[in-house]
Length: 190
Ligand code: AP5
Ligand code: MG
Image 1 (cartoon, rainbow, N blue to C red):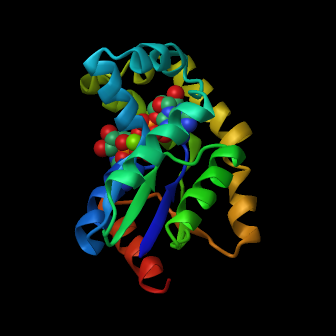
Image 2 (tube, rainbow, N blue to C red):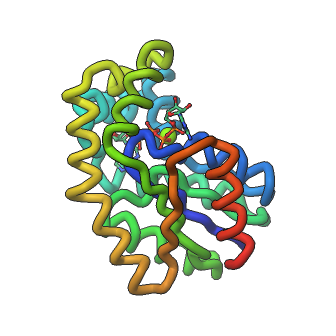
């Protein structure tokens, strides 16, 4: 199985590039952000609770997102692999993912980290905010907070996967197609 983690700060292009990778390698896309937004849209208690954190650009509690991923892994056996987008985001989540995948006998293949300048991240998110309806894209101070939360809580995961020799840096600046081809080359070597 091919289990890829698509990693990077808000606006790095995780969702955009995941679309290319699922097509190319026949993987199941698991985006915790998308799953949470579906819960909000459905008005579930989980969604309503998560929305409070998401609107501020803060993380949703680990146990909530770990539970969602566990459900999805259990519901998708016998597949070619997964692309994890926006998960894991804390060391605790990374440990939980290792454990869940171990139970299925299929480890993380690689963590692909999209590197994008902060100015570009803010420009992309503000631009998307005009049409996305995402409350966390509307306000530059919330976007700044999302980036800060990434730097403090999520970026340390690069060390976690470097220690496992699974961390790969990808230049996330430039055209969507060029970035997709960089990712494809790296995945081809895994
Ligand atoms: P989540 O939905 O994961 O959002 P995010 O990580 O903040 O990042 P985005 O989805 O905004 O960006 P992206 O990297 O996917 O980029 P995209 O391809 O969309 O999380 C939202 C919230 O949910 C979190 O803040 C948290 O509260 C909660 N949450 C989610 N997961 C969690 C977890 N595991 N633990 C705890 N809480 C969690 O691109 C962005 C824009 O740029 C688009 O408009 C796109 O068209 C454009 N674009 C993409 N590539 C390019 C390019 N090469 N050039 C120009 N524009 C481009
Ligand atoms: Mg996304």
